[in-house]
Image (cartoon, rainbow over all chains, first blue to last red; front, top):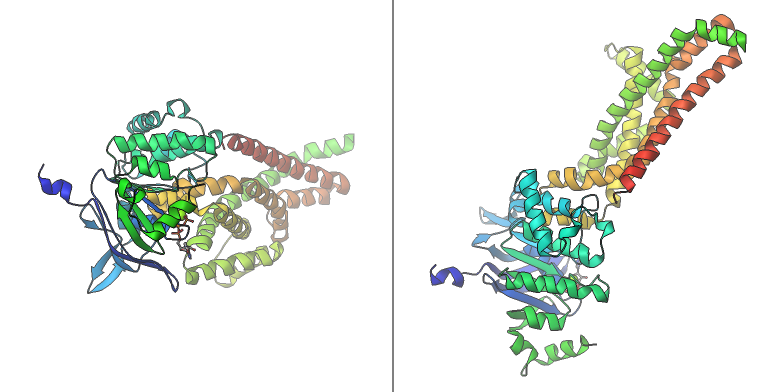
Length: 260
Length: 218
Ligand SMILES: Nc1ncnc2c1ncn2[C@@H]1O[C@H](COP(=O)(O)OP(=O)(O)OP(=O)(O)O)[C@@H](O)[C@H]1O
Ligand SMILES: [Mg+2]
């Protein structure tokens, strides 16, 4: 291993611009993550956090800037000086390099917990049934659901469903995992089990980009914290810097308003 | 009653043939209509606008036209164009086109009822759109569609009786021929009616049990 290996960013977002119709939602976002970074994005509602993650997972088109994942520019190519969106097959291949966990779980209701985790392994990674099942079992064990392999999502609690979703994302062995307010839809007593799961995968060396309103969790788990405001990154630093003295007026106000 | 049973015994084979013809034509139409309906339903939801329009027109025309008119059209138009279709084939074609429109429309509704998060979850693990369709959307949509799909089958069984108008030897026409010989009008019409009813109740029960089996898993 040379030093440049860890120096090269795993994810490099440069000047990302995104609008919905005439409204500019992301106004030039620069953000870069090295392998094993755990970066949390905080910021008030509507500041563009979800939109940023969705651009990285290529669920949204974007109008300007580049997203470079492990050295590969994703989502667009340049043909004769013009920027064109890649085709579905290409986008799918690139999407498989990142995992995403959604606020509303989005488990497949017609498949069991194991079936949810196996689908990508079978269809994208083209693994055989047995092989895929072994991996699904391993990851469901990892999130504490080894006894629920054959349960359908409707038979699981919200916290359990979200842990299945985490297993589904991680089983694909993505380079980067995006988590968008994954505990916001949960009853308060179920939040901790999911946060604990995320903490443990962070400790295992996964690279995570997390949008969260759980300030205490962000402080504990993150190597860096990013504060977004109106489609821009307004502040960025270590948890100590962000939560310590010397932060900006705006960040101060945000942190005060989010502590209740 | 004895006289009816004696006549029924004499007429058993023609009536049985007619009954089989009714089942065969309905089965053919539901298979054709389901394949067609899947294509139509998917296009109505996911195709670009210009491609959606012809499918929309097909569905609206089929659903807005009386079934008997469709049957007569399927019988006479190919003949005018110089194609030779047997009456049974023309009838199956008409019923299949009719079913395709209804199934297409109900599949459209089912597909649109699936939350968009399902497509996004599929995308995020790297599935291509056809893979999402086959593994995420259709299994869910077909489940929602099952009860009205069975209902379309029932409509086809009943609608197939209209094929007697173009001389297809299905249950109703065979029954009318038998009545022409023995003049037991009421008895044989009631008998044919009971046969239709039995098949449709059986279909209904089948649908309910499938629904229960699938429902238990969700
Ligand atoms: N599909 C869309 N069409 C139009 N506007 C959108 C769309 N999605 C998001 N927006 C707008 O983009 C802005 C940023 O939304 P986004 O969901 O990224 O915010 P957020 O920071 O995740 O907020 P929250 O904390 O409430 O989740 C908002 O003003 C929102 O109204
Ligand atoms: Mg959001």
